[in-house]
Length: 323
Ligand code: F6P
Image 1 (cartoon, helix red, strand yellow):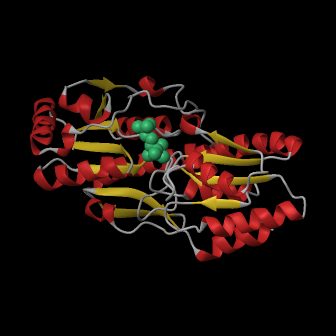
Image 2 (image 1 turned 180 degrees about the vertical axis):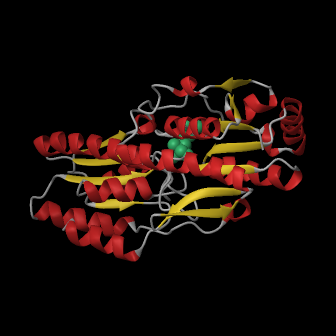
């Protein structure tokens, strides 16, 4: 292999730049030509590609977003789209591809790697942490810390007014941001897409707290929870708790921005380095995860496998600690 391409795809995640930097610098260290592909698969199909030097990635390790830009590209999920991409890579002589992205981006990569002879290495870059076979995904640590910081601030004002706050964090299919930020901020309840929550239990416990004059309560809701987000949960709760001064706060995309945490920079650097090593060693069509502090190379086709679940243990801890 002498020429490789790197792209970022799907929702951006803090630390993607650190991963791009690691791929570029490791590639150059091994004497490879490294090409940056702009706007994910979209830019690949449009030949929006440029050669990167070591200095192209100077001063980016600390920056959020992605210098390569990103996109959610529907066309790449069609055989015609992937054919276009293949032809561009062939024309440019690019023999290996590093894809930094989440679940959806890997699904595109799986189809591509099954159809064509250009190996793909995936690096898990998503704030959702919902990828099989890795303890870490790039961006989760930063996003969850952003959420914690915001919820701490919300608790100050909730406390001053004796209010109930329903805070929505990101996670369409995954509740890790909700679970981690909720536990770390002492939330009274946490609603996640992976588990059913009976609102009656929440109502009963809030009523019981009202009787004890505990009026400050924070409920953290993942955007993909079964009730359809914080506003819906608030509406349902308000019907039964007319006295509660409830407010809703949706944290939204602030969770995706900002300087990556030290942990995200470290895992991004480590994964980026190993992604290139995989291409050099011929370990093709895998994504690079970290499990129990060791590199874990997961065949790309396993990407749809069952992800980690949110355990009963954690839910019990939430309940006991919030009483
Ligand atoms: O996958 C990352 C994520 O931030 C999810 O948590 C969220 O549901 C989604 O992306 C939002 O996507 P978009 O930025 O396209 O609205």
